[in-house]
Image (tube, rainbow over all chains, first blue to last red; front, side):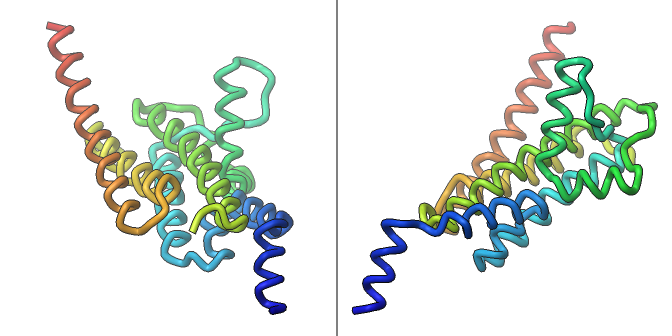
Length: 136
Length: 58
């Protein structure tokens, strides 16, 4: 009786605090929100895919955008980079992705880094949906 | 790291397809199918675009 009441309550009042926590952890660490929700395989795969893309971008001498108010594309690039907050912070602390581009591949690398951030946004929102019970 | 353009496409397509598959579908089976579908579309799209650019240039 009590269990069914609790279930009913969680359906009508989803645990939004837990969902926001899953989103934030997923934003900070790729796949972290899924791991928090005990989706081990999904979390590990998301972590591997996003970190690999980010690492390849850095290895190609891609640029990590700094906060700026200049060109619109630079501003958008910065917000894209912010999508993987933990990796972005690590890159800034370690001073990665700050060297001027000298090879053609560097432009691809920059796009890899931005896309890794955008993918991490999608993954974090997915973790939020899982925590809310909207997705199995 | 110096890789060919096609290798860069393979890396990009593989990583993006994994994320798309996991986030856009609900069951493991449909995730795998959708991921493979996206991967195929990325590669096929790149090859078609490459041939189109080659033919336009000639």
